[in-house]
Amino acid sequence: MRLILTLTAAALLGSATAKPIVVGSKLDPEAQILGQMLVLTLKNAGLSVTDKTSLGDTGVNRKAILAGEIDLYPEYTGNAVYLFPAAKIGAKQAGSPATIYNLARTLDAKNGITWLRPANINNTWVIAVPQTLAQSQKLSSVADLARYLKSGGKFKIAGSPEFFNRPDTMPVFEAAYGFKLSSAQKLVLAGATPTQTQQAAAQGTNGVNAAMAYGTDATLAALNLVALSDPKGAQAVYQPAPIIRTATLKANPQIAPLLQKVFGTLDAKTMQKLNGQVALEGKTPAEVARTYLKSKGLIK
Image (tube, rainbow, N blue to C red; front, side):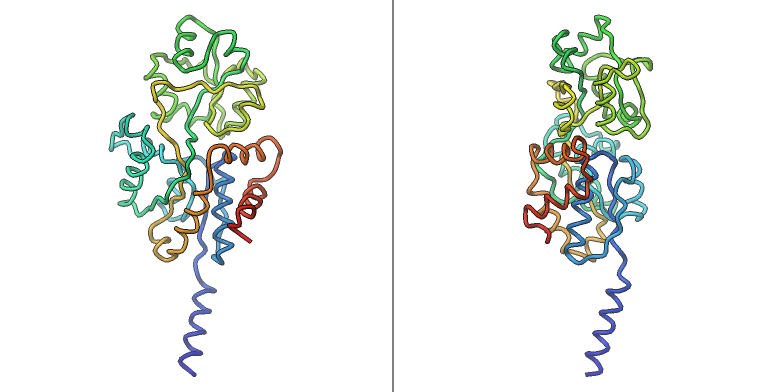
């Protein structure tokens, strides 16, 4: 009896002192929704969770997980190009969903980080322009945009510092399609989300007539913007996946099947709808995530 009581007391003490799992996320609506899905799923499973979603951009979340300041956050497979420059991941590899995921998973394993299976979504970087400009100048692709720029067409694009400065974002478009934007053609908005950049383009703020956007943005159609296609495949495939510190996963192995079940229910159409509920309807990411997870029977 004494042994049973001792073990029970130890179990209770261990439960009470268990370190919370810290969940981060990036700033855009999709990242926040996915982050809240992680938070709510883990809480529903009875795990102690600290919510640090909306932590910052890719670099901020990356530094935090490597430093052990967060345990888990939603990342995109295409960011392997940016996160592992020494690997020199080529366009063909980055454009293959399975290849880029396997590269990200393998390269990060040595950093003590595990990539779980991604959702069947490609939220890649895109350039968006107003429909009026697209129609008048016959712009449907980045190749068309390059032609327009070389002919002296008026152009100014709104984006975040990350979009302009990372070597695998706007610089890749420039290199692949043979154009180079001047500083006067860029409106750099610190901490900007795609919703903000698209609003600037739709409203013509400070002469802006183009915007940084993501492939699953629900605001594009609502703001009468056109996402230009990328026929040369300059941008990588960006599938969202939960990434977690391997030590945290080993201590809580039930996390993997729980989160992979959640991400397995997502597709592009579903994500666009969920993004729209935040960006267009004004709902909170937590509210949208909770309603969705409940509708799928994934949480109580």
